[in-house]
Length: 115
Image 1 (cartoon, rainbow, N blue to C red):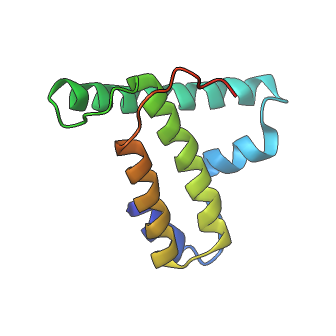
Image 2 (image 1 turned 60 degrees about the vertical axis):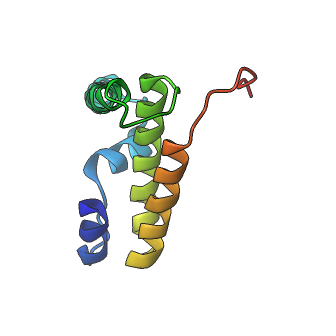
């Protein structure tokens, strides 16, 4: 919930530097793209480690692969940071986090997942 605390107290609505960089530059600049990839890889590895440990110890019962769940968390983290730039309503942001965690904890892979 630190992200929410930061969002509601950031009177300048600066947001997250990495998120702003991704939105502004994307992969247009090769050096920036490498930094973005390294940052994403760091978060993916961190989330995968925690998720794998939780699955191994029965704290997470989902059978969705840890890498898929890690990427979901990265994506929703970026999305939540954008939402936080649109509103500083703590209740609204907490509702979004609650929904994200509900989806995360109740995920089950589907064989027909191709869009």
